Length: 133
Image 1: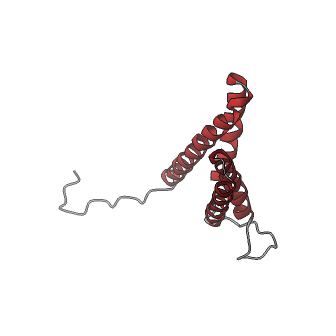
Image 2: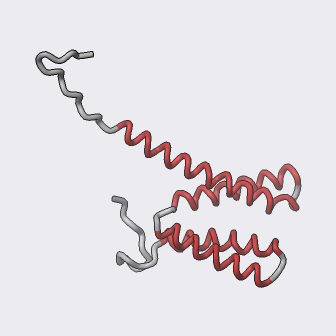
């Protein structure tokens, strides 16, 4: 079982994954609220993002958060190069969504690969009188 990194070195405390999740999703919530155009929408969306990020961090979603951040940086950079500065927020949002999707899919594929690498139980040899087919 992987060792959790905690703020104070004690199990049961706020972990680095929880803080990373709250930061990533809180920023996403703030951006969504900003585009909706009111202070109330920004506050509510930020609070929802912080809550979701904290809960996903509680479940240990560090690779998921990192894939979102990498996707957002790559998407925003590519959009900036191709279409200019005005397209960076849209590229970052799209890149973050694709990065999160790819991160989840890659995580599942890695788990399947690890399972296939484990030794399969030996099949039992047919007993007398059984047809081996």
